[in-house]
Length: 606
Image (cartoon, rainbow, N blue to C red; front, side, top):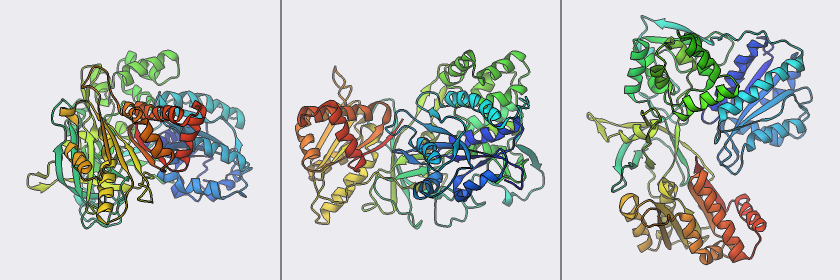
């Protein structure tokens, strides 16, 4: 930093790219205030050097920290988190810092990581120069960030006694280079890390080097109804990939070619031009926004997210390209923190689920250069699925269970989920070639009890059943090995028995063989009143309470975080009150304790 005259460093803990995006925006902002910023991945830095920031005048460390899973740090911030926990004698007294936390109120441990970093840095003597910002992705994360940032910069200016340079114009981070005579062997065609890594595959496989797994099974699970629930099997033979029941498989999807072609048409671009976007800051660790050289087509297909509603900074930077002053004004307004601007962004972009293509179609005067658009769009992220198999039974195969996302928006367009529609179209052989899926494994804390005699209670409606298919396979395998296996109780739920009761044959077979000691299924729409998994829990309250309170059972919940996971928790609180004679507070504490002891695990999403 000294060498390059930078005084602001923005660290990000990011799992799905948003934290990284926000840190890029903040480091870019610094320029508007006559300072020099850089975004940084804590995994790539020696965090023990933090104390030395005080050697730089007016220096500041900003931390954009997302929370992942059950209050955990993101993968790239794990080492930093460990360092903070282990180093009690670290003296950070010369460090100026602030934290913006990214989380989701739906979850138990809301913004745990951001709150911890904020508190811990202060304990180690660092000076907080602006209050912790809390972003809630269940509400409107973008708005939380914009409002925080709007107050943050004036506070920084005041603290360091600097003036804003008033330069509100767009600042390009990358410059375009078009290649005319490049050898096509040097051009990226969708690889995530190393060039040609999809042609010559070398273990170990991880997020920077995914394995191309052939699809061996792709079948529809539901018997009827207008949704498409599917079961896929990926072959990992020869990859040296190991997994445990409860882990997640990450897959790298690609965008729908029809959307990519439409973008090319509307912007009047030849998508097969080979280009590089090169960082104007030559000292930066990040040379390109995505693997370069590549074509616009590859970038828009493999590397960029073209289906999420764009964030306000994208609208702000693109506004200059609208030839109609009214459009320009609206785009800038949506990026401001004025109440009417926020409301317009909320309704016109988020509420209407407008992606970048829809915005271009509905704003004919807006025709940005494609290279600036590619610079601004966020990276297309890997998608995580709970693995629906056990490696004890299927060591060379990973099963996925998912529901295809497709819905009509307020503007009458059909929006399709990127990954689920891409998976749905992965036929076993495509024109004689095997269909493959770029993937890697992400370890989780969602594990069967170490003692096989411990009972397990599994609660997973809909595709939330995925990890439990693995658990059931594993308990069956343990039984076959002659191990004594505790009670195995399943609570599953779906809409109609004869429509979307997925894995019915397997579940009934497991019950017949005594692998499942009890199978409870809620069909929510087969009768007048809706019946859900939490109702069945209450119906079995005596047995459930005995398993939990006397028999040391482990509870597992998988599926929707927003309603189901909360309703299940409430049902368990009520069972504690009714069967255990507790007050509501005692029952709540009792369940919380089970979580801390690792006897109540959740694998939930919103």
